[in-house]
Length: 167
Image (cartoon, rainbow, N blue to C red; front, side, top):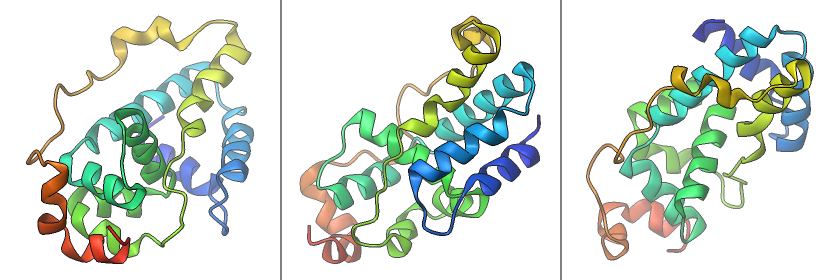
């Protein structure tokens, strides 16, 4: 599986209502038709995309919108960005500060379950755990990319976003 196929699968799994439960179920149905090796490849690509989004600007956006964001929640936020498709992912990666402009108030921006779909399916098909491939996974970055911020800095750094989400 390559990135083109990865994004095609993500796009095919999406639905008009951006319903995460429906997307998760559709993604499971799609990936069930793939070989265990392809499921591993899907998960490797997903992990790399999540690592690519590991930056302070995106963490600040999630923090402002949710009025706080732990490291686990930030992982779920990055999962959600990936779940929205290639174009949304690229916008988040290239112009993270503009991402807050297109997120709707009240939108669920955390998508934990999607992270586990490949692991569940791989285990269902093989009886084994994806942990067996740990040596093939991209190394998680030591620190987020970009400029570190403190909570007190957010209103100065992201004034429009803070106003939009009543920070």
